[in-house]
Amino acid sequence: MNLNTLIEPIIAGLPADRRQIMEGVVGEFALGDTQRLLLALVAAASKRERQLIRILLRDMEVKEEQDRIERENQ
Image (cartoon, rainbow, N blue to C red; front, top):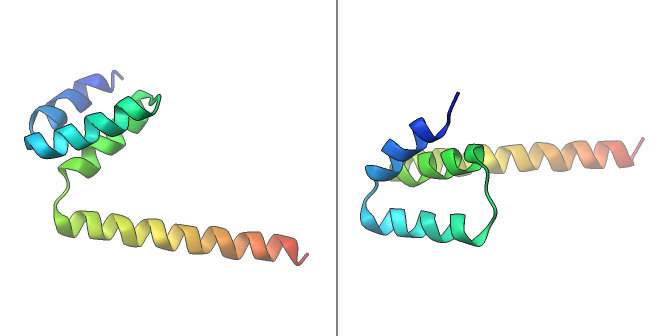
């Protein structure tokens, strides 16, 4: 599947300020299509949706840290 067919309409629908922020991040890093799609989805997300993303990321990081500590203690 060509991810650009998913990415471009999302980017086109972004407000100018969010598009500019996203383009800055894309320009700073060498990103693949999957990463660009994820950034576009986050940029298009509402405040509540971004809050849920932050909760998910935090919980994942806590789990990774717990796993790391568990491995060290074995």
